Image: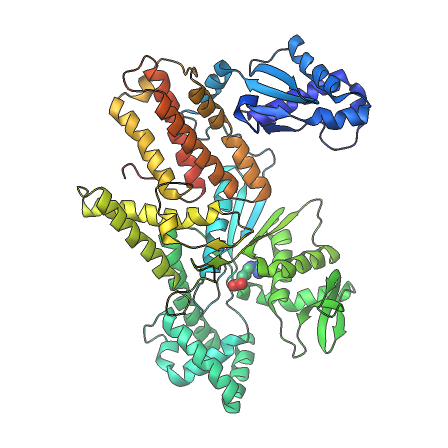
Length: 583
Ligand code: ARG
């Protein structure tokens, strides 16, 4: 099913070029732009392009609008009920209930809900979550995980080949320090003879750092350990592996709880390629040595004093860094993974880093922007209710797993209070869906480019644009179906959209495609949350205005409810929010 927006754009373009064939020579900008109507009484969509076209044609825009509209008198299309030229040259478009109803019916029982597969199948690499070994995952990584998972789910749904990569910070000089410390203080752990968890690692890491700064002996031992590790000494590698396993367990617990799938490919994966990356860049004449460090100077990057800011790719001590690894990674993703769409999801603090990496990759001849799309998807900070950077009461950043468990606990209280008759098992299941859904939805529904205020109370509210409201709406739609107790598959009737609330709901259902398009184009999950919130609101208006059970239009309305339920469920799933049947 083609979306009304795309269909109207095509039809209006035809109408325009028929009326004014000379416009065909007008550059590359699309001739026609169609938008959803700004106000309901203007109809469903509007076209404001006559104003721009009038200027090009040197004809009164109103006349242009009339000419476009008159095309549809000659060649009417069943989707358009009425066109109205208004003001200086707006065209207001009202859709035909009959055709809208017909299209809504095609959604039902189509697992793709009428959404076509992407025209060009892309190999999309999405780099997200990406915490650091021997450190706690923090709320920034949580945002990356939630946003990345939603974007990955969308691209998968659209039929692309998606590789979800976890670019874990599992390599670097700091591990020499940690291994040296553990060898000294907890040798049994490094031998794999003693169980431990991430919180111990984090403490040892902190202690190691202190010793490193205070004790020259220890500093030397650490540096030696780095050399051993980078040289591939089996004993050092074994110790490093143990550290990775402990960290991995902690992350995996979070991914399992959130139901997020990732392929781990940490920084260490690229270690064997780093030297070659430098050599290749040197051969291409891109490397300048500055104060002993190997640098790439790129256009448009200045430091605070206004001097050119280089991208350092090898430190003066010979060590490689975050940027070297990202250069190796982008080369790998383009040439080995054969990706033509690269997406990186991190906090906005890394914008400059990625701009530099992308530019360097272009200069190196690896990244052809005509063939490969690259996008850094930045997001803002997580704030506490006090508007300050998110922290727990003790001042320590709260552990992620506790944060998620807390949301589930709070959801449990709410569900138990609402439904004291539910079994403990049922309460647990619903609370898990609600608690996790609430955390994800709260994040996804805020425009990611801004900061986001983390508040259990707000995210678990049953009113407003929240997971709780949407999950509840979904339960309500299904409740109606259950109450009537009719098998949807047995229904012979067709959908009729007689009441304005029914028509508004029907048109909104057809716009699911448009919401997904917008989210894929802008990589903004809030395009989809806004859509779903709108769907729930329109459903509630319909339910307020139109009786379902026992009414003359009962069967038609049941079908409409079914289309709503399926769309809500599919939309929430794309956000990683799982629905429940009762609440
Ligand atoms: N580990 C990094 C951090 O915690 C994020 C890595 C993002 N991905 C990348 N390819 N640089 O900030």
